[in-house]
Image (cartoon, rainbow, N blue to C red; front, side, top):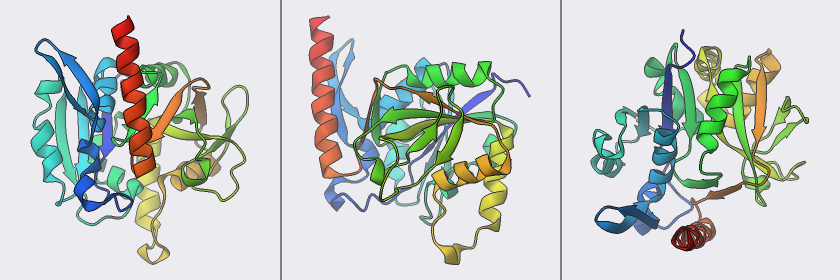
Amino acid sequence: MMRDQFIAVVPAAGEARRLPPELRPKELLTIGNSITARGAKPKAVSEYLVDALSTAGIRQICLVISPLKQDIAEFYASGARHGVQITYACQQTAAGMAHAVDAAHPLLVDRTVVMGMPDTLFKPFDAVLQLKRFFEREPIDLALGVFPTTEADRLGPVRFDGAGHVAEILDKPQAPPVNNTWGLACWGPAFTQFLHDDLAAWSRERGERPLGSVFHAALEHGLHVRALSFRDGMYIDVGTLTGLCAARRAAEDWSTEARRC
């Protein structure tokens, strides 16, 4: 397999239960503006990720949606407007992010996969490109882009050493050992297959299988997992009203900085 055979998977099938119904689908919530030849236009939060993927040279994206989120497919269509090629996979029943990613399994086999979440904002703006290059130059199975956060207890903190060797990936721990979270991921075929097999063996009676837990299981299974830390970066989850307000403030700050430049 060629290491430059990249595809992005973007899980957008969640029900957004933490937001009022009138603010759904959350992936299309307006956060700031895009500057075009015709002037400024409102920008959906998921467009930040799509733009970051395109800037990193990733032209093929699989958006995983549910039957209730056709608005996303109508908004992005083929992806041509964003300079990418978008394919859609459907997660029929909400079962969490890991199952959403696995819904795209036929498209991911023998590919190098980049994953980001369409309801987040992050800095640096080239974090996807940096993670892609990190994965290309290191002999690893799974790379995690890790960002600082004050909300590690409801996200996915990662313990790693100074060289980025990962010791533990947690999911919403009550007492986080570190103030960070993974927010981007890049992996090769070994993890794609591990994820598929892990979920096939997972009993639905046990509840949702968090993707971070699968990351940790892969680490324990012997896959080589490394972290790329964006220590001076920023990560905002737009899935809550607090996060939505924070994201809109951040986007306004970015627009102010751009105008000054």
